[in-house]
Length: 107
Length: 83
Image (cartoon, rainbow over all chains, first blue to last red; front, side, top):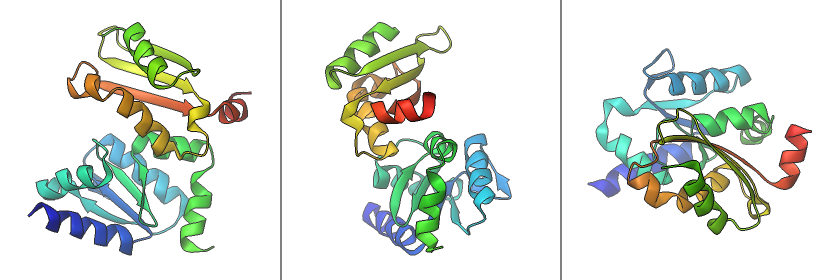
């Protein structure tokens, strides 16, 4: 069973330029960290795909194993694990996030 | 756990780094850590954090550290963001 979850996660991460595993959804985030990440991503205007880990415990555990990172939210850009809320906030502060997003969308 | 213990673990794992550990709540389990290390050069922010988490895996796993806020820099990044 576990491998199916990891394969499903891998597929989503590879098929979306920005993939966010969060608690809740962008319009109804269920945790402050997830909400903060949504706000940061929205500030750049690029589309991003999300999945609510609260809806599926297997995904919630699976993504932590997939990225080897213990907490949610988790952000992937162009199939690469970027980090959680702290790291995304730090990249945003250091103005290192926008170039990554631009590269992902090629503009 | 006290900051000095964490400092010792990190100094062993990342020799020659500048490290500061603060106990955020005085409760001995919520910490803020700053690390400036040339070992971070060429590493993404997540890789830098993974290195620190790796060094503290035992303490994190045993819940002796409950929350860890990390600020990691290469010497060059520290200059750029704090001068």
